[in-house]
Image 1 (tube, rainbow, N blue to C red):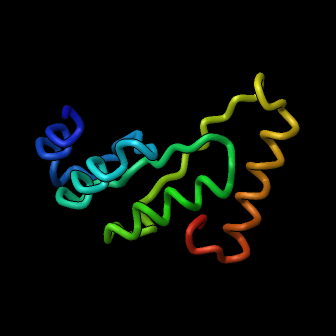
Image 2 (image 1 turned 180 degrees about the vertical axis):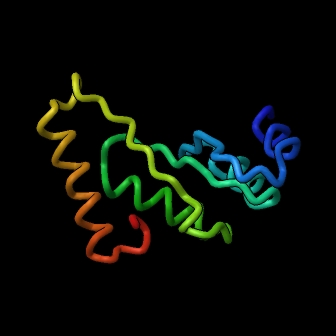
Length: 102
């Protein structure tokens, strides 16, 4: 309820708003799209979940280049090596031209 109002008040400022997750991405995406802001898409540290959320957001007509990905890293729970490997896979997918990652 607060974020759509914040988006409206800050219209024209090109803010980075979020955090959009699976349960609230529709509301935040609509607010960002109507006001020209960028969106933060957060998923657990899984490249497939990140791509899925990016696809859901872009299917609403939101430009993929205005999506900022944020992995909810949990190095203590997953291990630092696993966390690093997922970040590296994400970087390589973007460099290879994956449109939903880059």
